[in-house]
Amino acid sequence: QKEVEQNSGPLSVPEGAIASLNCTYSDRGSQSFFWYRQYSGKSPELIMFIYSNGDKEDGRFTAQLNKASQYVSLLIRDSQPSDSATYLCAVNWPSGYSTLTFGKGTMLLVSP
Amino acid sequence: DTEVTQTPKHLVMGMTNKKSLKCEQHMGHRAMYWYKQKAKKPPELMFVYSYEKLSINESVPSRFSPECPNSSLLNLHLHALQPEDSALYLCASSQGAGLRNEQFFGPGTRLTVL
Image (tube, rainbow over all chains, first blue to last red; front, side, top):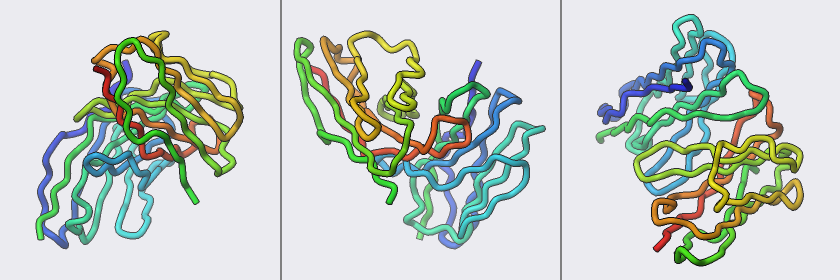
């Protein structure tokens, strides 16, 4: 059973705070993990990907992966109102092809 | 330039119509995908094309028929759809179809079936 779990939120944070978004997945053999941002009425936009255990930083975003715990997270530092969106965690299962399974997404609201 | 384009942006069709959705990418990617996204739900994979060959069909009804005329184009032919097929249809592409390839999405076609 391919399952990707996210808290649906909304997660509300004040401007300038750190937003922490979490995701768990069911298949221990999964190898690649992606975070997409989706504004209402728009398509998903890739913001981070991570393949190895540990942290990966890109600007204000940090992705964290713990394969033993089957857990991946996204930290957004210095949150801005423009970060308000739904954040989708996506996982590739250990098959021959890239077949992303998405979590239901966490809505983030950043208040000025 | 990570751009995937989709036409049309909006489509309204009756249950007896035949229509097609089009997707194009100029990034030299060799894998292309169709997803379906219902309101307030995550995208669901429908098809995977790798090197212009259909590699994955996620048990999609035959009223949806994909076609990959060349490495830059991906079509989705629609026939005898049902109202429950109304959704945002997303095309994506990636450099390859392996597990460590990032997928980039187009803006989508919002389909309404009457």
